[in-house]
Figure 1 (cartoon, rainbow, N blue to C red):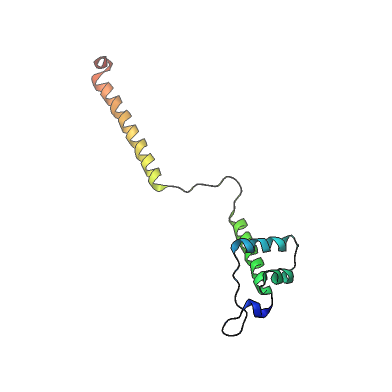
Figure 2 (cartoon, rainbow, N blue to C red):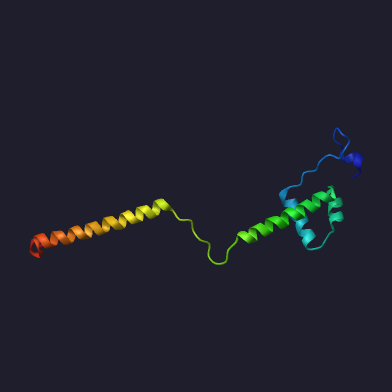
Length: 114
């Protein structure tokens, strides 16, 4: 496609071409596999070489950030303060009921139950 067919903006520059996320990923994969060079990818997708370089840089930075954030082993779960407080309250109430049952048994004795 020639420059005149692609269109220009008001300043006479090439019109911007927006690439989808999946297309950017495919370009990045081609670069990683060394199937194409930066110049070939830019020509094939009708974008500037700096666009292809930016795709490569963003993908690398994103991968490094994701790897840095990952930790070995099973992922930890976030603590739920409200759930922990409710469980502590249940344990406290259970201990209180047990204590009251023991006191009742001591006061009335075993014979009063049956």
